[in-house]
Image 1 (tube, rainbow, N blue to C red):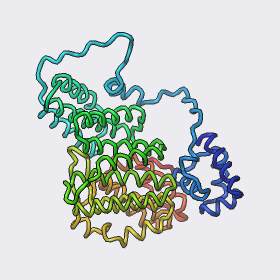
Image 2: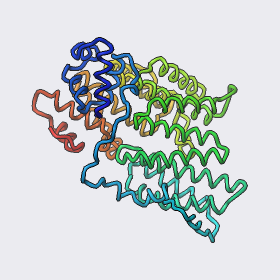
Image 3: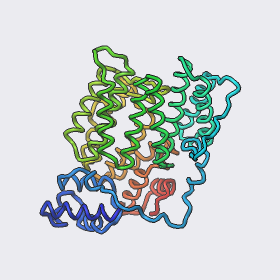
Image 4: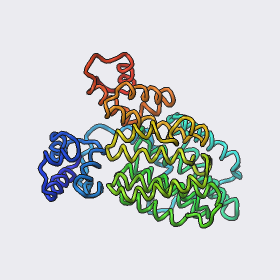
Length: 417
């Protein structure tokens, strides 16, 4: 936690006329947590959201910029591990223009798309090392195709193919295992620009959804909500009976805007965005899948799963448990009838329910959910900070000897008992 952030917590608390004990009571944490926040200690982002809400300010208002911390002497591993991908996304620029690489042989866009599809499958199966190894070559091939086809429909198709490759790179670089946000931004920005140049506003809009996810990860909540809302206006379906892709992209942007607003202590705005997403899901009917172009699985179940996050963000774990057990769209029968969400959204839903059970004291139910997530996506779970935090909380709350299941899960997630 930065010094300026700690100062902001103290400043807004005093402005609200509250003592540390009063703020702690309003938030539902111990006074020690508030003291820790004001002393620059590390606190959870969710705790920061609740502090902002109790103080009547946005989360962004507490997260003012500060001078970066020294990086220390240890070399950051991904600085070297991703050097080829960095070179492909952020090529060196000097005073002399680099000669463009001559493309002697006509690229085969059909084969390129098949290769890109294989890489996308690897990503969604959590084979991150394989994806990282393929990305530099994919990006170089995409650039050659754009250079070779300099006009007409083939140029447009080459731009869209490169946009997909860039989005894959940006998504890989943003996810929890890698978190290289600066070059992720370069990749996603370029993906959006390529799709816009190709005249495909839906492909561009789905890229904006990825951009919003990245901005939220960076704590840029105001920007994430703004760009999502503006992009919703640009792609809003104008008539009843628009194509499912259109509703899915627009509804996906509504979900991104809601996620940013909820985390930024703007619950009324988040509610409006969620209502827009539900309207789009109703128009679609059942889960609409277009993973190849828009990376989208959108429908009533997806909207319900994503909306559940809002209750967890504001610290209402009991509401999460209640909705998970009672809300029709979240029932196993509804998943069969309306269609499952994407594997990532489904896995995150399971993890959210595990965290909620932990906070309500039902450690057995929490372990059941963690086990379910591990069985469904073992590599994904291993790299989720939320999973490790949940397991750490379980260990802290467990009064009796740990079960074998708990010890094994703690070991798997790298959590010390």
